[in-house]
Image (cartoon, rainbow, N blue to C red; front, side, top):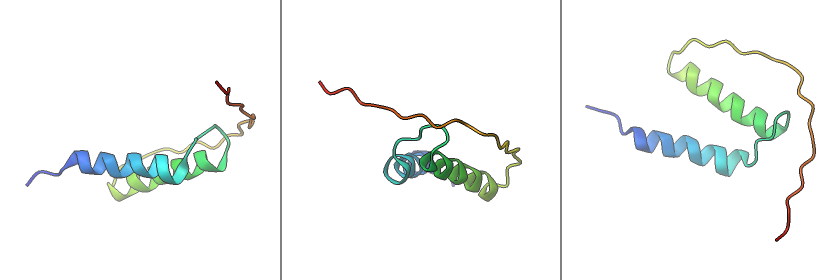
Length: 65
């Protein structure tokens, strides 16, 4: 029996878009996305190395057209 990888990919993509939103370095949304990725790796039994470092958080502006 093969897995439906498209459904798995959709589930994770939806989480990143709907639950995390914009993932600018150093923000809570980026940290939430990173933790999700770690949990996925753990659930698959994958080995990983996690590096923690300080990232300056910048503000962004969206151009109105």
